[in-house]
Length: 280
Image (cartoon, rainbow, N blue to C red):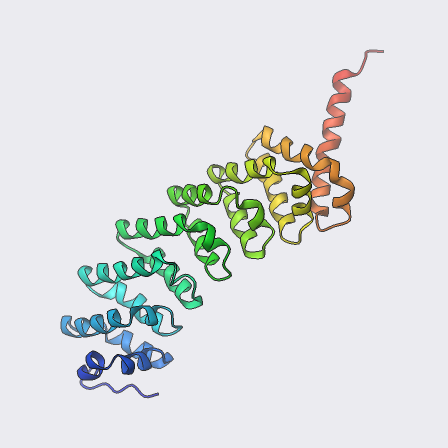
């Protein structure tokens, strides 16, 4: 599709009065790129595009190529327009409309990363944290939770961990949910929430998780990080909870867990033997 440009600007009437025409342009790969190049030419041009974007904001933000127009607008437009666009992101994100869409999810992650205003960035992180349980269980939305955990924002991490308390075992059985739980295990502040839930669940359920195609990686990581972080009680709590199921773990995907359990069990037995060895 050819995008018609006159004197370096977009046809004003088409952009302002015909939202369908504007959407047709920005949904096209090359049309999207052309529109982005026109941003910043003048305040008037930006005002025209700003109005057009707001009018179809949800449709733009959830489209593959059109979403890049909104992302670019956040960077180029002045502060007042930029804040208004962030207000629209928050409005839709509150109902998780954006994150439930594949391209909206990508755009939301970009907004969070590129937000130069701490106020709006923190608001977006708070929205993600507050909705962590439902986001984490969705094939597309879970990527938003994974993304915010990569930002190493302590408050957001704690918010996500608290909201996912009681959900960590269930999430660990799922492919993408297990990625989120593994990321929670990477920081001591959120690791405690996950490990406590593992220790409080039934031994049989923890065994089934350790045998699961996704869960075995989570359980192995929980054992490893508690050892690396010198969290002695949680570490040995996991070891002792899983030892009765050693024979079942050997015949499953939990063989990596078996290896570490055997090593630690041998160390423990050696230590006890030395402690109670009678002098000859």
